[in-house]
Amino acid sequence: MSAVSTPPTAPVRRDAEATKATILKAARHLLARHAHGDITLKAVAERAGVSAPLILKYFGNKDALFARVMSFEADADVLLDAPLDELGAHMVRHVLFSQSQQGADPLLRIVFAPLHGEQGDILRANFRTQVTERLTARLDGPDAGLRAELAVAALLGLGVIYGIARGTELRRATLEDVVDRYAPAVQVHLTPGSGTRRS
Amino acid sequence: MSAVSTPPTAPVRRDAEATKATILKAARHLLARHAHGDITLKAVAERAGVSAPLILKYFGNKDALFARVMSFEADADVLLDAPLDELGAHMVRHVLFSQSQQGADPLLRIVFAPLHGEQGDILRANFRTQVTERLTARLDGPDAGLRAELAVAALLGLGVIYGIARGTELRRATLEDVVDRYAPAVQVHLTPGSGTRRS
Image (tube, rainbow over all chains, first blue to last red; front, side, top):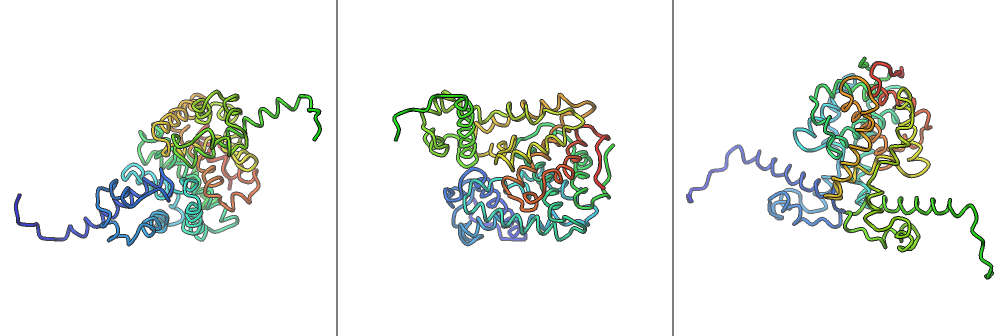
């Protein structure tokens, strides 16, 4: 072993971001399997392959870490980042890309709300204000709130089949094939009457 | 208190079916919140308001009860009971009716697979053979397996928004309004090119 330590350079910042992402992913994994109150910081640290003090350094405390995991804010920023007339395709593509390339999903953790008692209600409230109401605000025309919920429903179902049921056909298909097939059914709720239809 | 017992009549059989349904509902509730191995027969009995021996009388043992809850067979019988060209509307209506009238969902328990370790794989295998492959067998044309998974995805998402996220707009809407809006996006995967479109 050499006694000369590597000097910190540019990658350090990137490593910190990667480590934070690993910690968040570990926390999400555990929150899909155990009630909020049963998850220890130690369990998150072990799964992420880091020390508990490092988690505290990055996130402050366990509650702050879980609040971050229970927020959809950052995910909604990316999910909704497209012009309205392309938003259906963008959202379907983003869900598929997140699932297939990152083993993650921008929205799917809402399904674990029943596991978490009162914390589940926080998750539901976040989902409403940060996802469906934010999408609703983008929509013109009548029944925008209902249309936003139906568009989001279609996205959630895609995540369930990919990430939870592990549908073999969906996992085998190309991303753009699935976007072509599924996005019109999302877009039709966003801009009724303007969606293209697969024949 | 009268010493005269009420003689058993026709309602007894109906009561037995209702009790079985209550027990199954209690088991489903617990399986959405606790790992399979942590759920006791006593907990199911308490939630259902019956005795543990009564559960044993109806279902044999705990494993048999959970095997029943983890099967989609009976639900798929009802879900798929329509001609192919009306199946999208029928399935959407059935999910909404189950959610709003029975506080249940024919498919949604697949989302709790991550909670249950190896039992979750049984749930996934059942879902594949009893739901998606059975639907696939009904479909004509290319990519029937993928199209079945996408149709089922749309149904699952609707259940997530209704039953888990508790979408306020979806719960406020009339059943037939939602069927009109959402069923075409399911039907298009079943019979591509023949779906009607909302303008």
